[in-house]
Length: 267
Ligand code: 6GU
Image (cartoon, rainbow, N blue to C red; front, side, top):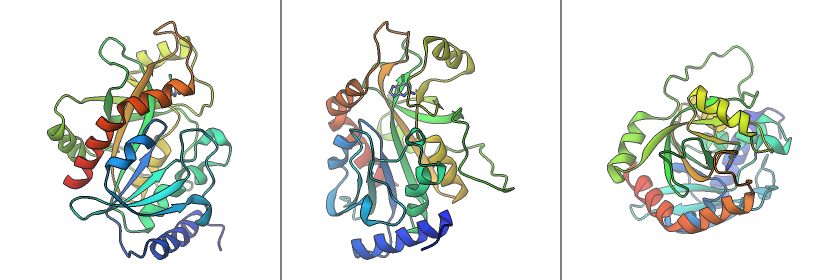
């Protein structure tokens, strides 16, 4: 075992190849809160491997984050690694733990990663609760970065234009937006939400951006999709809670699952 984050990801990938009995995977999907119920629609389960059986993975701390990798065979015969749960920066395990899944997927041979999340909507004028929104770009306000050292990485097109166009061919009604990430675990104040609207944000959450950066470092093509589960604080007058995030996920599971299944089949 090694302390180096990239070596640890290679060890996890080897364990994954072993456990799955496959030597390559086509795509990885990270299912955020609210998205786990949609996972069943992606394809047929080949195997499930609990995170705790793989080097470097942590058992998730939060309800709605399942804590295992499901190996799925899609209807077109592709193999997907479906991460049922992710580690968040607010858990305090550090940035390497947050991006370990993406680095493991890259080391396992994946070329494309689909990052999903539940997000607060910053544009209630045009967004409805339960709408998926394609992430066109992000603003990283977590204060963290998965890359250390002097490797300068271009982030001009973190979220692949090609993949966004492909998803809009499947569902032309989908909007695009800029995802802003805070560290959490608090939701934002109404003043912060007003700030984010001024800054050009469209959705706000606590995940995805660090994984997307790590994926670009590994040269993976990234697709990001937010499920808007509630308006940001102060926009609706209602207080926010995690249970409502999960409830919107359950209510939209079929639509999100069908969308993801079509996406992975067309990659
Ligand atoms: Cl309003 N904020 C953050 N940071 N994460 C969320 C959210 C809001 N709604 C769902 N997830």
